[in-house]
Image (tube, rainbow, N blue to C red; front, side, top):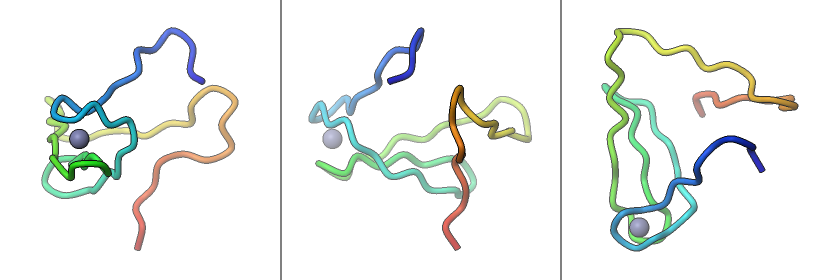
Length: 62
Ligand SMILES: [Zn+2]
């Protein structure tokens, strides 16, 4: 659990599990209904840092 953060869910089905893909934007796919959302970053780069008490961080599946 991550403190001081709001849990996000699918706006279509309420699903809470997602797959994240790296494309022109970050694409988040709901694993329940497969609807997608685009995470559009205002700046041209995005940094992915370790979360609190995390030994791994988000990375690209090759
Ligand atoms: Zn969904």
